[in-house]
Amino acid sequence: MSTTPTLQELEKQAAATAALRWVRDGMLVGLGTGSTAAPFIRALGEAMRTGQLRVQATATSEASAALAREVGIPLVPPQRGMRFDLTVDGADELDPQLRLIKGGGGALLREKVLATASNYLLIVADSSKAVSQLGKFPLPLEVVPFALPWVMDAVAELGANPVVRVSKTDTTQYVLSDQGNLLVDCHFNQINDPQQLATQLKTIPGLVEHGLFLGLANAALVACGEQVQVLQAGTTPMPVASFTDFPG
Image (tube, rainbow, N blue to C red):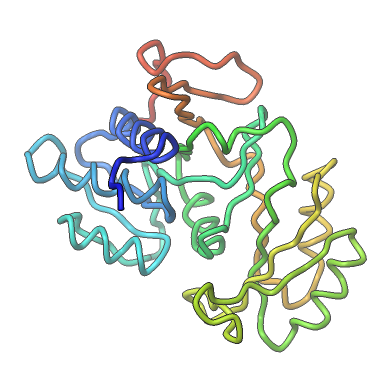
């Protein structure tokens, strides 16, 4: 079996490595979850090991917390008054206004908690994640198990085809979030009005959180081949080397 990285894997690594430019010594950092956030956690751990940076962090999932401990990033538990200088996370889709779909990794609730508690949210992504309109990727929901039938009915009335997420290795087993909730993937095909949909989803009892992240991201690093560009809402993408709007 070949171990040569795919283009997508190389792009994920490029975006994750570029994100280190946003980290400053002494920061409290939120660590995202997923296949692009993981390379950032490893890169941050290496920067700490070599003495380039000293930070503390909180992770958005048990998997990211385990990886952070493995690479030597000290973790801080949630507490009142906590604000993150910077959170670095991935996205399943992002549009030109930096509206996001997140939750493919099942950590959308914790991801939104940390994103909302952050002074600066930086998204890292490969080129496949940048879209002109949200919705091709199924919108994840985190749902209280008792409420599942009614949530499924309500979401279907909004035009989605909801599917409860099952294990890839055992399709008879539902996937649970770190909070023990079910994950429902809603196939809309396209989302014409993300803000309206987000408002409607928030009214459904038993729906703990949805994967629409609106007005939260400050910037996104999108890798296309060997080039990494910085995207901000309503602006022209620019090379990483030309960017100056860092947190802090």
